[in-house]
Length: 239
Image (tube, rainbow, N blue to C red):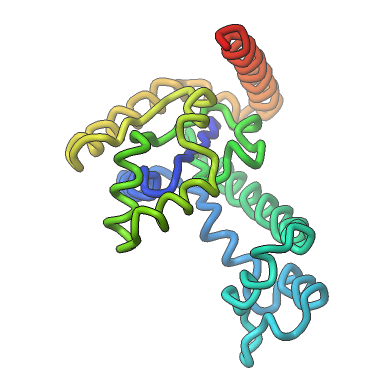
């Protein structure tokens, strides 16, 4: 099964692309949804958070008070790393199980919707990286319009993230979301056609003969690593 990593930046349209793919019955593994599920009451991750940060990060009903937890880790790098050490492994494990579920059901491919795909290094473990892109100016305008924020507030929020232009070099496919909704819809339909062609007939062989699937995945990841090394060398030489 071909695994695609979908990412972008805030207000670039990644969530819209993900929704269009879902509407087209493309299997999606959504990291944001899973991140909420792994800290629901009764989970081991929530128990670890309670032990680490205290009962004050829980509501009376035992659910996580995200606002309270956010205020604790916002300006504390040590505590933020403690939280990430608890949550990230749980999210990755759940994503893997969901992906395997799609493989068992015989899907040709699935899309991993991960906002921090590049920052977290997960881009190295997917077959294709798709980045949803728009210009910095358009991104700022959309963020201000969406949240009703000032230019300074929106700029500060964008400044806290990896610039979208720095994600593009990691992409195997770039979806330019600078145009209309119809143009984006056409881009997504084109993406699906490319994924169908890329998956080809080999998905049946990898499902019926798992060693072939493992060998194919290894080769895909090795080729991705080689291509990224070449990109990095080109980028360094152009400085």
